[in-house]
Length: 82
Image (tube, rainbow, N blue to C red; front, side, top):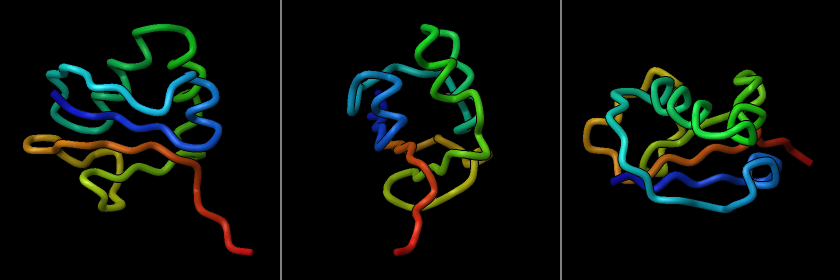
């Protein structure tokens, strides 16, 4: 079981802040593909990966990151300064 969290417009498109899912995904990319196949709202949220960032167990990483012992994956838009 892995906790998947969504922030900002990703949360708005998916319609929830987080969910716990069973997955066989080995990497973040594989997890995204599983999610995209669930429902159209996920496909829309993950349609442009260049507009997304990901953290695995609260560490910013890339989409090829392994999920072997991960407890949490978070998706969010790039952070901007101000």
